[in-house]
Image 1: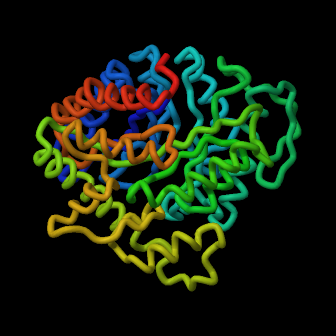
Image 2: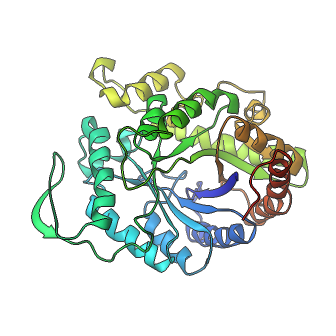
Image 3: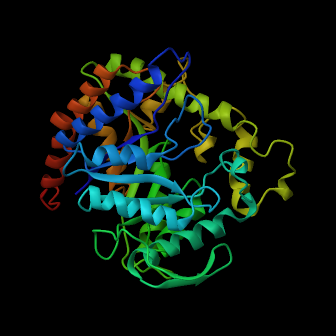
Length: 389
């Protein structure tokens, strides 16, 4: 069954008028509660640092903790926790996730990552050349910390002699599902090889994602280096999403907000690796450095994907190509079907964008719940897919 998720980055565009940031957080909580009522499957909270305007979600566990007490069925996901130890030691990640798993009665999804940008890491003292290896070691530790007792460890990045037992213990057995964020092609196959769910930004035409999804699906069918006690074979595609009763109005409101989002990301990341010779950029970041230098401040190179130019308004081709899942319910449904056709298992919708009004966002969620999701369920039923539980 194809699933619909909702992701929050907590965007707070300038000017920062009194109460604006506070309102954005509280509106997100209200939207998340309504998303559960509308049939969404998971709420994801990102972890970003220093991304002024575009992402004020630096403490996802705090927001997720609030949602444990406001929701009852929808799953709650770290989208993602940054795993370099100077940002989040894996022991602390395990403790915080276990606490959330208890408070939510076993609804936590554990997304992991390292950040595609050194800008978010250097202030913490992270050695960016080692982040991929550090992410892997830290992520492998999570299921061990959740399931083992009297556990000592000696590794490259983490080391302790004391035989520790992390408390509290997770509710889900053997442990919450594990995910990794991917912003470059080779990470998709690696996610499959490690049996991790794939969280993939998909701000490009859905058909462009097919090779990456196919590589992931082939690898995850028989993981060769599985992390954790079970494989999570879900491919979740992140995109800008917005529905409105009027298609033209949806394109203007959602298109402008989505274009603002990628433009501000471009400005923030413009200086990544600037002045660093390419042969001195760490291998695991070279893909990002090459893409960002090639496209400058245009396109979604901040997420490692090239979405190209656009029409006169700057967002029409993003909508028409399906890169933005924006329109009236019928148009949005067609775009969702394109994501489903290329092998996605769920659509992670980023709706709280730029200065979109809370009432418009609540209506967007309602249109997804009342029209888009039922239409996709009907298409699944017609194709002989398993009925919704």
